[in-house]
Length: 369
Image (cartoon, rainbow, N blue to C red; front, side):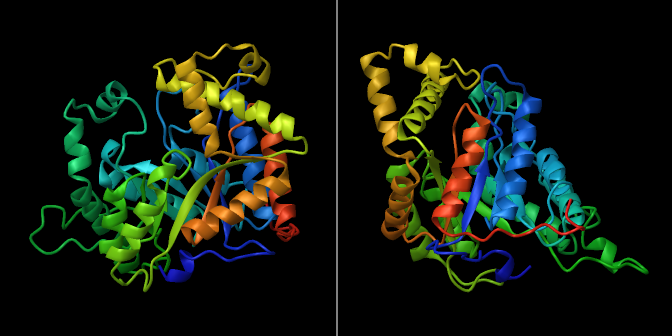
């Protein structure tokens, strides 16, 4: 693993590398199968248009989000792509045994050598009851509090370097380095780089202290973006992984040929968030349903605040706001996530943004899937 496997490449006139975050959203009237087909189409489009990486986020018990199993989805995407980096944005470490994650991502690395990222979060990615069911424990705070220890354990499984005398010294994550040190063994030189994800200062500080790349969830914690990035940079210590900080931010962005249509889609996504925040999660509603919905004063305040951080409108408006966001935050990479009921509009949004920044069209060869 080298810094080159972490740092993205800038294409066209984009100020920094552009990437994609996918929640595999399921709209009303559509199935999870439909959503996964859209994800394949979007991953292939991202690859063809020079987006650097394509991440999938872990969420649970949300009818409108079909990304409960990132490793399974990434394996599917690996079968349909050849160049774009694939990763988790992220896997919620306290929900899983570190050995299981090391095995899953070792398997993904074997499927797509040199292009797998392992992004880790400490939140549950769901409500407390669902988290308790996932972890088979009601002591949820312990998972978050133990995150640094879980991270250290996972790293040792990935590197196969538990010290002598450790109870896990003779346990090996397979696929992994043990195969290269076995008689006759040959092992890939790549190991999925670990990223820490966060929406507050905890992971920012930890990523800085460990010299790891950091991804901040600007798309749902915009007020904390600059303080968290500042903290990451202030606490950064050079490591074997990185000699300087590298931070990306997740940005909710939707460009459309028609500004009105962008607003309609964003309003529908905002209604979905209102329902989620009030304990009524469901499928992403249609724009027509959102237009007919009468928001209370409190709900309207929420969506006004929420939509203020969603970069949406015509592609010129979107590009201007993305450029401004980059200037304000100094982010090393922008990872765009689009929330819309229409899969065609989501695909069109990324195409418009790619065109706005003159991202290259990379032709597929006979070897491409």
